[in-house]
Length: 194
Image 1 (cartoon, rainbow, N blue to C red):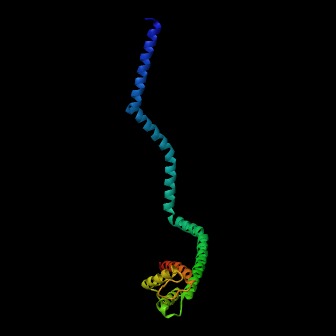
Image 2 (image 1 turned 60 degrees about the vertical axis):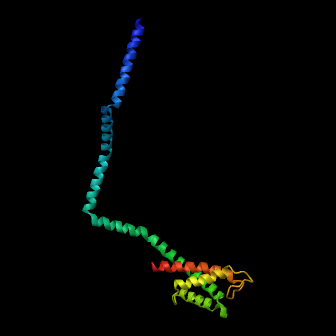
């Protein structure tokens, strides 16, 4: 055996031993504890100034809480004032839209109304609905259901078909429109009650 082989063998053994030592150190608790300690030191140096600032701020707020509450209230009032104006404008526009839809519903109801004997119950329900829209009387849910059943028959009516009451050729379109408006009017009334 020559010297080079001996040196290489010793180097291999030493290198293997170093690898084993490194492996043991990284797997041992000592390396883990050192990592935890390093992370804790980094967190402490980063958070400590922030913690001190928050403590100072908290002390200041607690000592002068009424002033801060007043400032916050004023800031909120000023921030919400433009929104309040927008909501008022929106309510006015919505009210105008609702009024237009209700006028259209009344117009449909008046056009469907007929002075025929066969239409007596339908006419009574239409008059009741019109009064309800004008806030001149009640319109119970059972009457609404009955009127809806008449309007559904009318909406699906075809010329020459017997409906049990008088239907003009334009009435199916009017009935479809009135059915949609009735639903919107009922929704508006529910919103007003809330």
